Amino acid sequence: MLYRFGQCSVDTSRLELWRAGQRVALEPQVLAVLIHLIENRDRVVSRDELLRHVWGDRIVSDSALSVRVRMARAAVGDDGSAQSVIRTVQRTGYRFVADVEASGSIALGHDLREAHADATEAAHLPLPSEPSIVVLPFQPIGDPSQAGILAQGMTTDVTTGIGRSGALFVIARGTAAQFGGEHDVHDIGRKLGVRYAVRGSVLAAGRRLRISVALTEVESRRELWSERYDEQVDDAMQVQQRIADLLVGSLQVAVERAEQKRSLLLPSANLDAWTAYHRGAAFMFRFRPDECAHAERFFRRSIELDPLAPRAYAGLSFVHYQRVYMGMSHDRDEDALRARDLALQGVAADAFDPMAHWALGRASLLRGEFEASIQELRRATALNPSYAGAHYTLGWVYMLKGERAQADECLELARRLSPFDPLIFAMHIVGALNFALGGRTGEGAALAASAILHPNAHLHVFFAAAVVYALDGQRERARALMGRVRAIAPGYELADFLRVMQFRSPGDLDQLRRAFADLQARAA
View 1 (tube, helix red, strand yellow):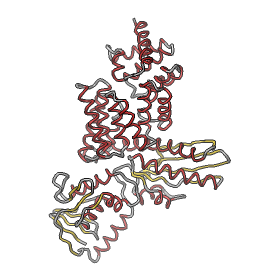
View 2 (cartoon, helix red, strand yellow; view 1 turned 120 degrees about the vertical axis):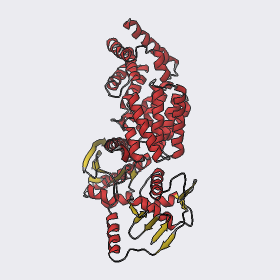
View 3 (cartoon, one colour; view 1 turned 90 degrees about the vertical axis):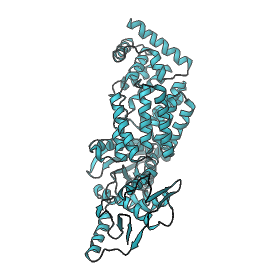
View 4 (tube, one colour; view 1 turned 60 degrees about the vertical axis):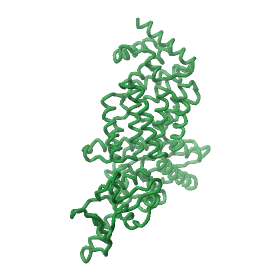
C-alpha cells in the first residue's frame, strides 16, 4: 500500500518513507510506529497498543516510545509543538491527523523482490541507540532436579530485575528461551536487536551451589564483566533471590559504564536522547565544577531531544544538588529549589522510574526534609530492589538521624549490590561515620581509609575521614587529613560540614564537636 500526505509518501511493501522526492532513512521501529498510526488514522491509538505492535513481548519503557514518535515526527516534517501530522492525545496515545491519499503499492516486478529482500534483512534487527539486553537461559550443571529448577528461577529473576530497573530494554523470557544452549552471541544480537547478552550457569552438588554469570557485548563478542557466587543452600528460594538482586545491581553498573564509554566516542552532533544522557552521566559523580558543567550540558541536550526523558531530569537535578552540596552554588536556595523541581519533572515524566525518585529523595534530603526523602527513596528501592544508589542514600538519611541498625543494613546492602559503583567512596565514608559514631571506630577507620583513596573523593569525604580517625585515636592520620582539607579550603570549619551533613542526634553532634576540637588543638 502507498500512502501520500503533504510532501511525504510511505510505501509499506518497500518499507520506505519518501519526503520531497528524497528517501528518508528510518530505524525499523520508527517506521513501524508511523505506518501503524497511518493505518489506524480513523482513531486514537493508545500507547500500550503501539508498544505491543512495535516491540511485541519485549519489556521497554514509555520513554522508548516517546523517542520513536519524536523521530517519526521529525522524519515527516512535524514536531511536538505543531503536531500537524501526529497529534498527542494526553493520557491516551496518538492519532495521525494529516490528510492521507491511499492507493495500491507501486512496487512491481523486481521492486517486489527488493521489498522481500528488505523484509528479510529486517529480520536481523539493527542495534538500537538505547541500552538493550537479553538474559539467555541459565544452564544447569550437576544434579538436574535441583540445578534445573534454580537455573530457571535465576533466569526469571534476573530478567524481571533488569526490567524493573527502567534503564534497559530487556527481551522477554519467552523469546530469550529460544536461544538456550550454544548460540553465537553476535547472531543473537542481530536477531533480537540487542547490544548486550547475559549468560549464566548453575552448578548444584548436594547443599553446595555455584552460580557463574558473564555480560557480553554482542557486536564485538567482548566479555565486559563476569562473576561467580558460591553458596551453601539452606533455603534455595532465598539464595536465588539474593544472588539475583546482586547480579542485577552489578549488571546495571557494568552496562552503564559501557554505555558511557560508547557515548564518549560519538561526535556530539550525533547524540540522541539516550546517548546524550549517558555522556552526561559519565561526568555526573566527579564533584568538580567543570565536570558539573559538562554533565549539565549533556543532560539539557537529552531533555531537548526527548522532553519525557526521566533520567535526564534526574541527572540535571543531581547537578544542582551537587552545586549546593559542594559549595559551588552562587545561590544555594535557588539551586536547592531547582534540584527539587527537576526531580519532580522526572517523576512526572515517568512515575515508575527509580532514578527520578532517587533524585527527589536526595533533593528532599538537601532541604532537610528527612521523612519526604525516606518516602521517595523507599519508592525507588521498591521499583528497583537492586538500586544500590537508593539503598545507600536511604542509609545516609538513617545515619544522620542516628538510627544505626537501619543505616548499617541499607549501607551494607548497597555495597554488596554494587561493589564497583561510582559512588562506592560515598557508601564507605557514610558507613565509616555510622560505625565510628556508634562506637565501632576500628571498622569505621577501615572504611574511611578506602573512601579517601577513590579518585572522586572530595573535601567533605576527607573531613569526615579525619573525624573518624580522631574518634579512633589515630591522631596523626587525622591531623594529616585535616591539613589536606585546609589546603583545599583554608577556612573550612565544622559548620561547613554540618551545613551539608545535617545530623539530628544530639549525641552524634557532641562527638563531632569533640573530635573537631581535638583536631583544632593539635593543629595549633
